[in-house]
Length: 298
Image (cartoon, rainbow, N blue to C red):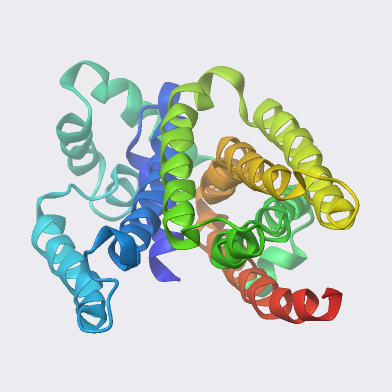
């Protein structure tokens, strides 16, 4: 939970303005790669750790990842925005030079200065103060809505229970099919990194949601028409893949960093905490209710 709030904010504050969306998408790319690694390691047919004798070693993987981060993190410069507020202009400029280049350092420091001075004299907002602030109400509604859209899109039901869907569709190796779905997720997210700052956030959200609506409509039709029409199992696989593809181009990437972009510095941390909390609550709700709904509909 802490990582999903801190990492997008950090990426937003260290990235050049022109490619901030692409850098922010790297957070989602890391998540998709992590999901793919876990799927691949636990797939029995790949003969890695997905066996009755080796499954215990799966729990060592996050330990290894955590140790790697502990070793690498000291070499990462602090956020220039944070340094400007706590240690001054010189420290912020030094971090920018390390993160970007000497050429853009003065320009980026000026951007931070304007951002800090626009809220100078104002204390960091608490959760209650943020909800009461009328000037930030639109940003709060947008941020919370995007977080809910991300989870209520049902993507976690697709990711968590895709193996069951493939099994019901008669796929010979459902676990391997889920791993291939994770591979598609990673590849599409890589393309999303490239186009995030070209197409714009609103455009990507609009078209990705249209694609997800179409994919879910086909998925629903495949389940309803399965007793009467052939090839509905194949259609359900295509539709599930479509959901993953369109999600990766829109809410899967944008939801993580949109709050850091639309809130001023004095409210950014609090807004991220609220947004990520709502995101994970919605995640739990979808994961908890989907098996119940699945059993009820069978």
